[in-house]
Length: 246
Image: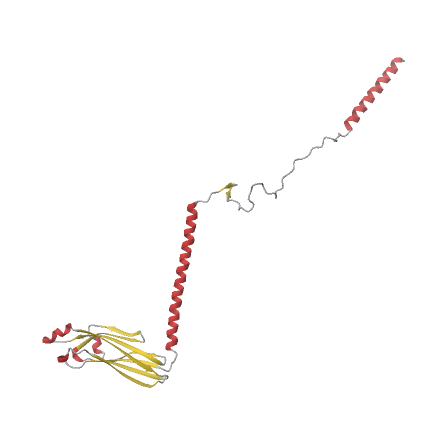
């Protein structure tokens, strides 16, 4: 019976040992005194020591800084300068056109201030056979209103013609006439063709409201070939009448 008691003791001991091992395996690990501290994470908003917060970020390509080319900057400046020059030229052209438009409007207003007043200019040639008229010019208030140049003798055939007519503002007006004449001669008097005369004359007159002022400009000579050395003259015949619009 002694051996049975021994076997029972061995079985009990083996059972107690297995339960102790199982209890140890199921027991949670002791974490006291073994906790670890994680390293602090830097805040993305914190400024890096020594870095200028106001400086603009440099240009980068693929994260690498890019240096500016001086030639590129010079070309950009040249383009901007050309643009400014073109703008200035356009402004000058606009100013010139505006001045021309204002001048035209002024002339239209002055000429149409009094639609019931007009000026008529007549060219009268009484030079005779001793002279040939090569050119004739008429200026009214400093503005050219008639000009004809023909050394061939066409002007000699125009004995009396109306050279200009326009509406005008009442008041003072001025007329200037320029003639170029040449002597005419035959046979023994052929040398007279070398004589040329430039005749200039001015005339001032008044235009009344509602009146038509007619001015006849008369080119005349004082005699025949015997007193050819006397210069031709210009006379004016002014007539005023009531103007009626048609």
